[in-house]
Image (tube, rainbow, N blue to C red; front, side, top):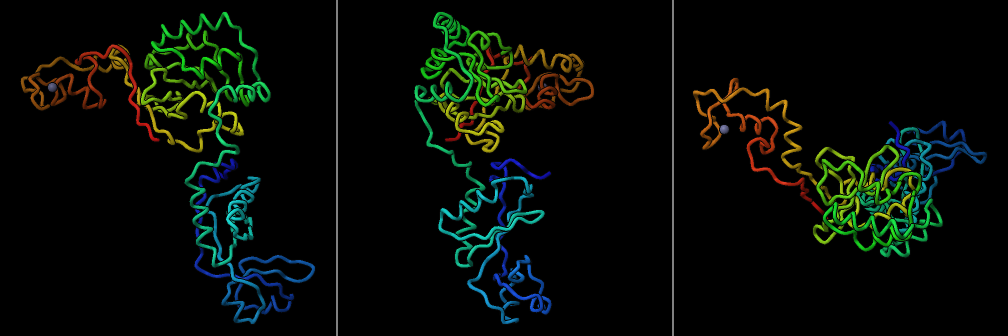
Length: 364
Ligand SMILES: [Zn+2]
């Protein structure tokens, strides 16, 4: 499928440098017809036929040209409607002082750059492909500076003070930790906040009412996207951060999308809102894995556990040091059969952790 999202396109550029050297010439129709080698591109102008052709072929036909060019093809199936993709790539090169002649063909976009700058251009494009898109403005790290932007450009109402005091107290008792300062300031000043029709902020009451059975206690959902997906903050301040977590991901492996509430606000305000801002950077900050307490796990696996037979033996379980007898149709006891199949500690045999908990793999 052709890609229309500019940032996805930028992130997926696979620039390929062709080994041939090309030149641009303008020739008459008769010269054009006598060429022994087919030009790679042809454009008919009133003044003549404008061709791009391999340098060796141009030399063989004694054609006049200025400068030699290398061809870089961007191996992304760029939709012709992806307005701005070529512009963005050309801009990158222009900023580095590399002249670019861009051609949009049916399947790919192509860039002609002066042969002596081809390696520089390749490096630029490769960097653009691995780096997240440049923010359009410098990041703002003060929530007080960001809040006026919310009121000016998005939907928000002034917050009601009395509800807040109550809510803040409830949050601490329910989640076990207080709100970080930036988040408290946000809730003190605005309510019913909606940014880009994509991020709807929950009132403190709503945050308290969300179903958190599968979340660690300190995770507070605070924002919702149009498909009903929730975004949470971990109030327990692991690694001196306040991870913002996308709860939509794999069941127990969640994406960390920012390291503070302010950073999250800053990013949603500076992003164009065409998608969630982290769609392009995937695992920029790493992930959080949730481990459910054993009550949750038991509920989940009760049917499987019940389906296992008693430990008849007479052979012992094959797991190392295990003194249990084996169950029917297995070389293991119940616990080890469970662990073999599900690859997690058996919740029916181990000491139960009291609460769900998260383990982070944070990158910085
Ligand atoms: Zn065993």
